[in-house]
Length: 199
Image (cartoon, rainbow, N blue to C red; front, side, top):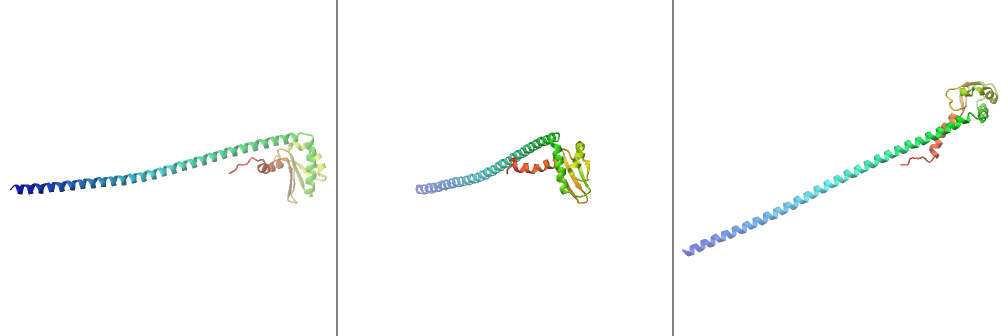
């Protein structure tokens, strides 16, 4: 009988040993599976974090580009407004100087010269010379400088001075006004003043 007990004990010990090995194997596999899953989850988490970081970086870069663009646009607008202010100041001063010139003794000589120039262009019998109301005091001298019959009328459109001639039969206008001469300087000023807005 002791032999039977010993065999049974050996059998039970073998089963226990086998069970222990199986437990250890399962524990090891579980640990290995757990480590593998943790690594996979960690890698997935890192990928998601990388994607999130890239997205955030793209958003930040887009915001920086947008802010820079807005700042550049605002800066250009300020420069454009300032350039316009300078241009307006320059032309206001030029207009003031021209108005002062129309009060000088040289102005009548300039009107006479303008009347002569217009008479060389408008060689018809229906010429009308338009001048400022204020210059109507020079009417006779302007007609004399024109050199032949013409009508001289006041025009509210001439603000600074000079003469604007019209011949309906010829369908021509000869503009010798200071207003037009000053107006024509705007384009020249824009091209040559050096007050440019660069891209």
